[in-house]
Length: 206
Image (cartoon, rainbow, N blue to C red; front, side, top):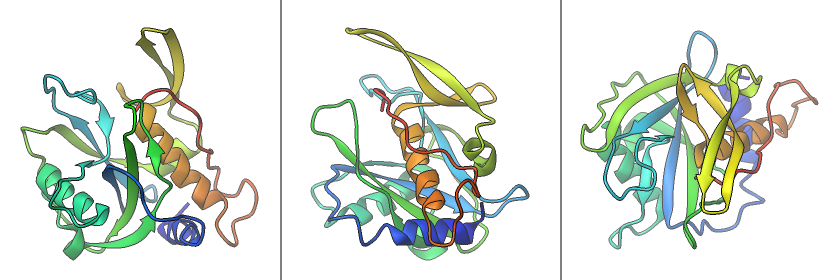
């Protein structure tokens, strides 16, 4: 898997996606690394009343009334949370399919960006406890697979997840990564099994 494969895969989705309908947006930000493409993940700060407090995630957040569209939302939220100006420092490759959350009526639209230059990530202490770059290849190949025990009033469920040295990626972010890998797997010129990618799996979290 390389950035060109990702560019083709995400670009091929444009004809099949309608208008984004999310009430929030996140950014899957990619860069080249020694093991191939890497994605930026954050661990959200602990905030009372935030259902995603402390979870691993992509930068992003809810659309504000002044945001003319969701692309504006994701650019603003990324700037606020990790100090990156994606409009200046990155190429927008496209977006993935809208992804519903466990919150009734809340849908999140994921955008995919590739950095055009070296940047410094500056997490906001108020919103982000940690930011890290994670190679995509081990995730796509299943080398970081684990399960996460999710508990709600219906009972407990073992959900598919990734283990990044003790940082567990599950729910919404896990599903979005699955959508990204599936887009690469289906991209023009990609033979079956060539990318080693996984498909999007169902999860109650996020």
